[in-house]
Image (tube, rainbow, N blue to C red; front, side, top):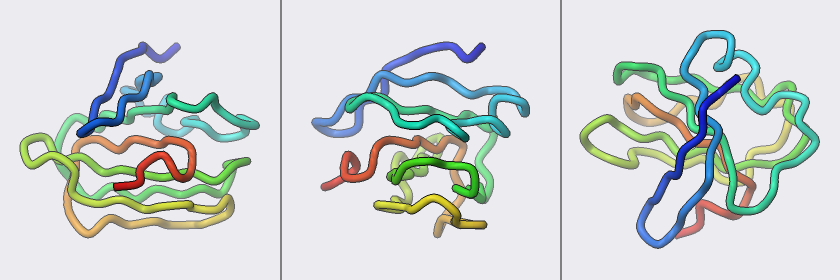
Length: 106
């Protein structure tokens, strides 16, 4: 079972489940009907790399925030709909954060 933590970006804060293993990365928020406002899932892939995300098995819209290990937020995909095969950021990142659509504004 994933651990938990808190992610703060500027004036926004989310309570998150942590996904740190290949099994947790593969499962993510797939087939979850919804999540409460102010929560999400933080994926830690261990090293900075190009992280491709898909929303094929998602059941709700979400924002995805890619975070580099030293440079902070490097890209944001807003209001991603379920069913996308690939979402590729513009930069390498170690982490990505999935939150409800509209929560990554500003």
